[in-house]
Amino acid sequence: MEQRFITLGEFIIKKQEHFAYSSGELSRLMNSIRLASKIVAQKVNQAGLVDITGAFGSENIQGEEQQKLDVFANDVFIQTLINREIVCGIASEENDEFITISGPNNCNSNKYVLLMDPLDGSSNIDVNVSVGTIFSVYRRISEVGTPVTQADFLQKGINQVAAGYVIYGSSTMLVYTTGNGVNGFTLDPSLGTFFLSHPDMKISEDGGIFSVNEGNFNQFDQGVKDYLDFCKDDTSKKPYSARYIGSLVADVHRNILKGGIYMYPGTISKPNGKLRLLYECNPFAMIIEQAGGKATDGHQRILEIEPTELHQRVPIFCGSKNMVEKLESFL
Image 1 (tube, rainbow, N blue to C red):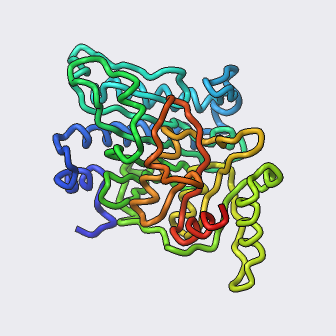
Image 2 (cartoon, rainbow, N blue to C red):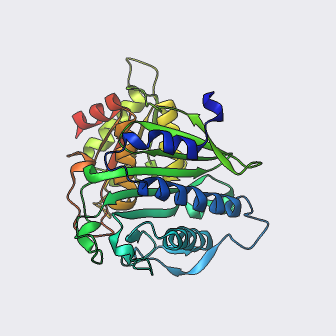
C-alpha cells in the first residue's frame, strides 16, 4: 500500500504492537481525538460565517479571557472522551480542576488520563491565523478501579505514553508520537479522513529560524538577550530569520518541518514564562525529542521537571538540537 493512502486508523492498528502497553485502549483513545479534532476543524473553518469568534465573556483559571472557540473545543473533546468511556480522568487548561470520569461501565477501571490545551492560540482565530489542539496521555499511577487523583496528572513528562497536536490551518494536520517516532496525518475534508502525509518526521540538527516575542526583549535574562544578538549578528554564516506567529502550535510545527528554535523565556514580570508545563511544554518536548530535537527550560530537560500543580508554568526553549545547545551556552 502506498504511504499516501494509509489512513490514521490503519496506521494506529498497524503500529499498535509497538506500544508497550498495547491493549486496544490507546487506539480507541486516538480514534476519539481524531473524531473530536474533525468536529473542531469544521467549526474553525466556519469562522466568520457563524457566531463562533470573539470572547465568550468569562476567564479561565489563568485569568485569560476565554474565546468562544476555547469553550466549544473544550466541550467537544471532553464530551467525546466521556461518551466513549476510554479515559478515567481529564485535565484541561480551560478547567480549574481535573475531571474524574466514572460512567455506567466503571471508567475507574480505565488505565489512562489525558491532559490538553483544547484550542491553543484561539485569540488568533479572528484574524485567520492557524490555531491548534495539544494533548498528552499518561498511564494512571493510582490504583485501577478507584477514582483518579491529582497525582495521576502531576507526572514528569518522561512518563508520557503519547503526545500530539492538531493544527488547524491551510489544512488540518494531526501529529503524534507514542515514543517510536513522530508521524503526521493530513485531513482530506472531502472524505473526512486523515491520511499519512508526513511519515517519520525529523527536525534538522541545525536550523535557520528563531521564534520569540522580541517585544519582551528588555525583560529577558541577559543570556537570552545575548543569544538573540548572536542570532542576528553571527558573522560565521548568514543571520538567522526571525519568524514568530504568536500561535504556539503553528510556530513549533513550522520549526519541526524547517528547522529552528522556539523560545518562550521567563521575563521580569513573569519569571516562569507563560506556557503551561502539563498542557503545552511536556507534550511538545516529547514530540520534539522524538523528532531528534531538544527541549529545555534553560537549566534542565523539560521532560525531567517534577510538576507541583496542574497549571504550572515554565520557560521553554525547544527545536533543533544544535540551536538549543548554542542557546544553553549563553545561559
